[in-house]
Image (cartoon, rainbow, N blue to C red; front, top):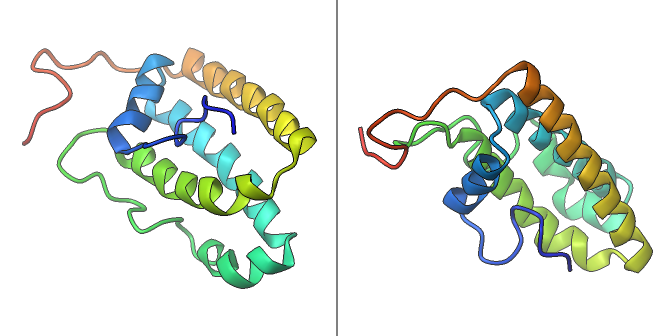
Length: 138
């Protein structure tokens, strides 16, 4: 499996957020990136009879994942947390089913999703981090 997806390896909401920070994405750009993964995962699950039976219910509501819509006590982590929830499904249930050619196509799509999020970030720049830092409890 490719190691450049933000949910690869031992990911958590901080490492996914670090992926977003490395790209300097605003919340709008993060949301765009998440939406691309969400559409791809939903299409894959709904077109695979086994996954549709086992995981299709996860795509039935307005939000995906246990933590949808929650920002906890750390500002700006809502999209990263949803991406992690979706990523766990993708990493555990979808990626093992992909052959080499399908994985290569996904990597190509992923590059396009990053470019699309970069375009959103260009029109909606990320706000500067507060002076006291992002990793604070309030």
